[in-house]
Image 1 (cartoon, chains in turn red, cyan):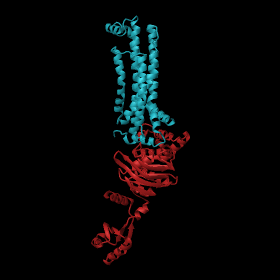
Image 2 (cartoon, chains in turn red, yellow):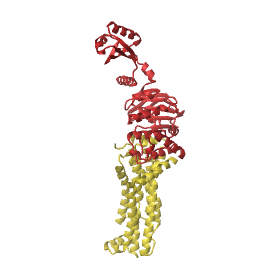
Image 3 (cartoon, chains in turn blue, green):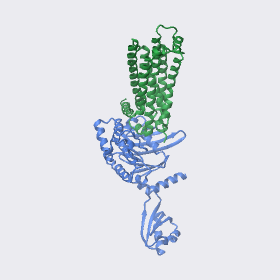
Length: 307
Length: 263
């Protein structure tokens, strides 16, 4: 659905995005992660044909972005960093105004506005000026605007930023549901738990692409394994013992549990267990702990910074 | 063009709701097209009792048969130029408000993400300032003509308006001026961070109008058909230049990355 090849963008002397390439399939949720200033918004703007790249190619829905900007903008919806609503006019009129640019009939506009305002619990306040809405309501209104013409691709820049937990949960469920509607979602977020639960694949970027993979691939690519050892007693008692075992690193204690990193687990685990047991300790459980996306992300960013 | 009309219609609705835009316009229309001509014509007889005024007429026009008619003709020339303040003022109030409103609401990016061309956005914004300006100016010229003719006919028994100068100012000079000031206001607004400074800088372009009025009152220069046509030609030559600049300012990338607002 989206094909990006060697895309670069400079603003004056500053390189915002350097030589990035990726493909996104139909109805895929693609998490786009990176620190502030990593080039996420710039990439979204280029994909949405709001700005042009300095080099590289973008193909969306089989069409080159350079010659088909208007077509591409007609099949995408975008939730920008800031909701951007006309504060003095009503929520309904805001949506009606934007939907007119997509050539929707009066009936189609009315139907879709009602559908999305009801979906996001805004229907009762449809006639209130958008300026009277809370930050969360504006965000939901902006999301309704992004969807009003039923786009094939949705670009979401921090969709749950500023939302209360209940609304954020609702929006996340909604994004998850977009898969069934065959909508491709380009999800830009700092909320790594959200990216982890929603994305089919994630792309970590810091000007250049650091990694593109599924969460499973990211977790399995880690050569070190985190293991949770549960003792029958306070783990603190066995700290001296664990410190002597060379295979154990980064020991963290939590009650009866010790969370440790083990290098080359397939060969080290039996040795570690034996050494602990030989010293008289009782192991109740020995479980692998999968690294979270947050841990992987921080580690990858740290590696990139140290290069 | 259809999308430009969508912008235009929405903006007009907002202007109607915004009395800080239309209230000063109504006040100026009342002053320039009703109050001032009434006061001038009704008071013209008394003015002629003033020795300095008679001396001024003799200095500018030489010896004349009917000084009252000459005086009214002269006053109407001042009013004619004063009325140009309307096509200059309306766009300098509307265009900055229209552009800065987009910046303040941060709606430019979502708007540019729709299948709109930047040219359609520019045309929409231009129409928003230009159409009310043309309508207001035309109404103003018509009201002035009616007021002047009624009072002049009752008091002096003749209809001084419309004249050819009148037609040129109302239907050629005034729209050209509106267009130029709209473009300048849009260019200035794209760089401005608040509405007041944009309106202030935009309204500076009105200064040449005051200069013409000043020169006329000093007796140095008197508007006639030739001068008006020269003025039209100059404005016509300026039109493509300001349009070119505005188009450059209305570049999609420039709007998204460089148009900032005070936060």
